Length: 616
Image (cartoon, rainbow, N blue to C red; front, side):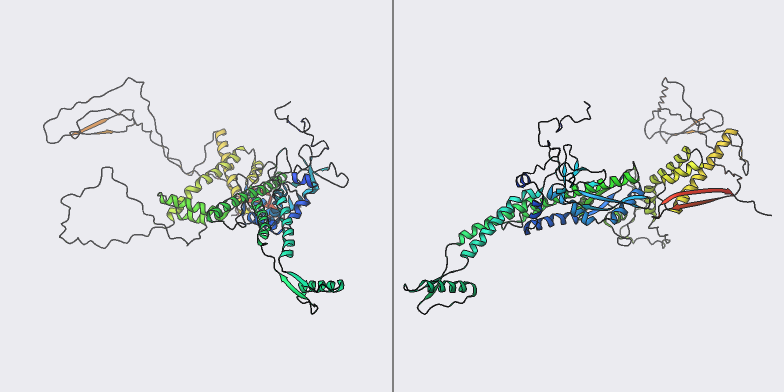
């Protein structure tokens, strides 16, 4: 037995639910009523249940959706986004939401070939009662030829969104199972309420005849009373009478039926939306706010079920077309909630002292150029290390004197309003540019020849357009050619032909840093130590002592030379840059790009050839 194998399995346990080679749905309501999901589908005809279901689905459909690229390649993310744009996502999300109602919802994928890709043409929800699970929790299709065991489904053919599915119950939990009995009691209560209303809602008609009236006359009067109830008119004999009797004291009985119906409606609302604020008459602001939070939690949970199914579809698309590539992620989110959270966070940071640039507001809140005022780029004055500057007494101005008049200041050149943003943009883009340069350099170093380099560049930057790909390949080939020239020079030892010979450089100077601790009373002596460089490794130290007009002070100089190994001398050699001219024949580069029907680059070929010499 390996650690990767299952030990606790149905085949080895005392659970006899899967003895028939398939696992029945353990839903208690379905098990007691015949085990068919059509029973739950009929519940949606109830007005209250149907309204709650529409509200639940609409909350998820109203969310924003998009693809998070993450570490996926740009071409993969772009192709997946184009595939999802062709799908009917609103219908697909609605059908995937049926998993919340019935516990599970199989979605069949119809694949087709589009250019060089295999993409889903349509994703269709199929009735869940057509499927069941086997003892290994694998989904199987119940066919006419094999209605008991069912047929095994091919891989990458069916999506299976489920709610709270477990190993014990792979069918998931159906929310409609919680509303079955409330709907049954509600329908029964309404039925008796209608009978009660019909019986006691109107007055009783009482007809009176003399005792000597024959049975025929009494039957005629009874028919007349029935016509009186239906049509409001009746014919009675001259010696007869009709009396309408009101049934008093039955309003309390009618309230019992109403309370029963409202209780059942409240149970349905709690089961499907998590709150009963729409059916309670005594709700307040606090309870409504709490109910809204619960409804948002249910919406987020439903969105996770839908997103999990669509992410599985994206994973299959990427595995079929780009095996082993990283797949982007499908997300559903509430943009209004995110905006409120971000606005509260930005306000808190602003109150704490943080200031954001216009670029941040444009990126995070979607402002356009010209919507925001220009930023004030005033650099704060650097504080003086010696403290605030003091004005000499001779420069101080008498407050009674008028201020001095100065000449008109020279006009200053207006500052470039884009200089600061350009600097920040260049600093932010430098890591990406350096990373791209390192990638191209690595491809050049790893390529054995130009065709290998061409194939590597096409694999790494195949998602670029023709012009950008041509520039990248030209730069890489130029770098490869220069590296080849340098390698030949190193192997042969030949010197390159320079336009002008470089001037001989003087011998490098050697600098020694000498530090000697000298103890001198503060303010009495100023010591300047100058180390002059020389061609020979020697040091000349000149000490200039400036003494004020005062008695000759006592100077104590303590020089400590700790026992240590011989000092290490660092030579700094600076060689100035010299222009190098390489005499190469004129060449031309031709790039041929082949695209498929979808506009994607299939192959790019770059050919270099020498130009014929100019004719004299």
